[in-house]
Image (tube, rainbow, N blue to C red; front, side):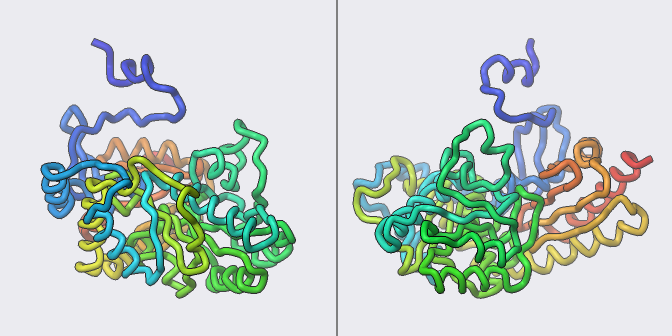
Length: 394
């Protein structure tokens, strides 16, 4: 009988590489493969499994809504959609929300809002300033906004975006021109290397937008819903955006995204945008259970403390492993940067020792465990990384 990898190779478009593991079940911070090997999961669905695997609140919502109503389209009102809207808007203090199916769709919708702002408020302006090393999704517009050429090169020409260095306020000021409609930025660049915004950076971008009548649009697809130690990363500086894109952790494993707007960003009219599956009762019920659990249990505050614990423990490895250049991050979005490109070998060595993690660059390891990870599990992860470093550097 062919292996799982052989079966996949025969039928799937080969747009991404796989790790040699077939996962079949999960619980909390752990997953099991088809050979019953257990792994500590520090990928967590690429920062999507907020409450870990099979959290009771998520399972209960899946069962309850699955027995009630899955999908009816947005021709009709549904209560789970309204309940989730109330939860997200209440936590953010923003005005309007639109639900979609993914982070790429959320940023795509934000880009459409930015373009409409330019057409109607800026005499036809259409350009959006984005940052180098950014990642905004895989649709044509979102990959064009992405400031990492390897993602967009196969799909050129890409137009309407100006890429400037991240954390460089002067570069943003220099890029603003008569055709500029908006600024789109991640508060912390996840795929770009877990690059943290400098103190005051978002506040400076807010001031530039206010000065030049631009929209400030934040891609919180990876950073939102408690991941950085606040419900939304912009709350670290109390700099509310005009538009915010959410996804990943919003549904704790169920695919859902959202475009959130304040009064300035609330400019879509009937016919401007739409979705068939976005905001369906099933995904909204699960996301509502996720968001309310995170808020009621004050999980963001716990994440802030756990993130400090994890980063301090990783920094303590530097004396024994000088190949570690830097440990950085916010909350439970953490990176370890090395002086050598040992990342892929380290991922394999961690997997052999019972832990799943990934790299965002050959020399940058990313750690994004469930927000519910325990202190004991954090220490287990650090111990595995230390043993893996011993093996790859010996």
